Image 1 (cartoon, rainbow, N blue to C red):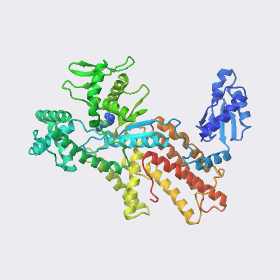
Image 2: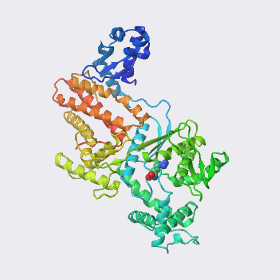
Image 3: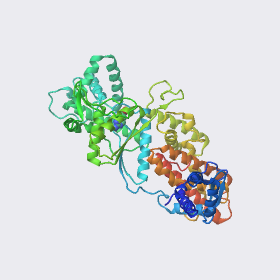
Image 4: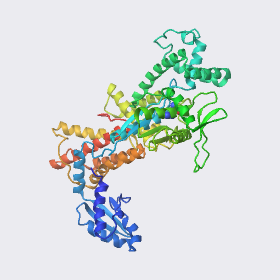
Length: 588
Ligand code: ARG
């Protein structure tokens, strides 16, 4: 279905041409003076220069022709040359009826669907998830859902941090604690036990202990580095331990992501890229992309236009160990082989931007991807506390994700039991749904690249630009529809009539914009655009609701029309929150 602006522009274009002006001036925008008009065209001002005529004369000519069409109920030429427009309410109603009849609510699928890999989540194995990983999970999940909704083939990859020093640290600490374990016997050739020699809670204690020791004790650190290298070089016992760490840790991660309604197609990680490294290194050397600099293997990636110095991309350290760059480049090679994506999108903390500049440039320069393979970095800002510093627990420690979710859910539970009609188990479930909306909407409503303040009180409020407010609006619609059903009505049938009053028309105008929001939001990788759209839509709905007695309306056709409008509003809102990664309860 054509976007509503395109429908308008078609008429305005004809009007410009019919009056002897170029149609390129026929751009239509949402009005920034809603008190005067709904849409406006400022093309006469631009055309004035070309035709050496007063803009108001051009606007007058064009308006004359616009009036011949029945798309607008009002078209005025206003000094100095604006064209103010109001849509014909009949046209608007018929547009919404078409939209309602369309399975995708009028959103067009991509003409040439792309294969897109989204690299998000990025947790580090054996380290508990903390709030720093929350943003990546939330933003990435939303982008994945948006891409799919638009018809692309989107593959979500968690890209585990499972190959670095943290593995060597854990192995070293385990060795100190239980040197008798068979994993440390280098001459052992038999099978290793199927059970891990630790639980996830032990693992979560082992890692920080080891990490703390390595910072104070250089010998300890060197041992851990050595263990990391031995693991990477394939020492059997260490590999077996590594598999245990992975099993235990991944099971726990999956549990956590499930709570967030975040789901990955691929559970690959840095370690999966390891087998690709030797060939890639040889290729980079043989083709003259990489050279030795003080023993380390590097690729130059600076460009003339760089405002600041971009250091070379280091591929191997002088001891031959691979780095974060190396696994990311090898992962690109692996992804090209396995999926041949048109684009790879990385949702990672913006402080890693330099790393991705180096990796992307190196990949392009060395032709590890195709020339037009997209490599995009969606760098997000920090989630801060009210003090403007990275979000912490009340005691000042690192906030674990699980704890944050629990705290929000408790807060929500209190509110729901206090103010609403849901009780017991139902209240707990509802609290979880509303809690998730508070966290996700609180995050996604900010432009990803900006830091933001995670304000529990504000995010969990049922008023203002929050997830709970959006859910509350949806629940309100659902409960009206439920009552209508109880009275014997069928909300799935009937026609939307032209607006009966201003607040209804405002709601209809918001609904008709739906299909102009999603595709650009995805192109710009900007879920916050969906948030601001549904906030406007929810406000428009609530104004309409407060002014309209829907269920007591006596004119049947009018009542049906309003019910149909409610169904459409519910469907658009629910589609949007699904794209953001949460859902609405039936009651709250
Ligand atoms: N594990 C990394 C971290 O916690 C994030 C991984 C991001 N993805 C990537 N392909 N480098 O910082």
